[in-house]
Image (cartoon, rainbow, N blue to C red; front, side, top):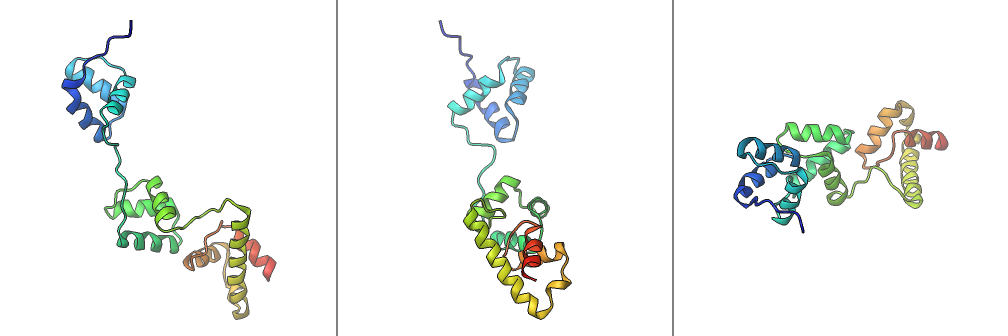
Length: 172
């Protein structure tokens, strides 16, 4: 005989509100126990939320042109992704690091790390070309590792912090 299902339909609104407000399954089960004297497991809550097709806790961000330009500006100024999220949150844009990464890669096409050997070689050639343009002007020796990295980011050339230094030593 299958286990008896507890009727949570009378508490559906309460459960959905807690879930959409960010409560996890354990907290919802505890709140039901405390406020309605009903004992259910977190797994039961999870199954019911799935069965009811309750929308997720976080909604996808649809960035407008202003937000995309601001994020691109933050990246070009040399801010790391975690710092960019902090700046965005302090300016009233609620965003997680995962959402930031999605916007950066899917909407702006900016990848901070490339996975294929071909892309790494293309990136290294592009950075080397830019460094070679700077060298006749005598500018490359003015840059330390951090300044060279920031300078390249401002030009839209993204790489690890060590790559520009190894490329500059090879070209100089």
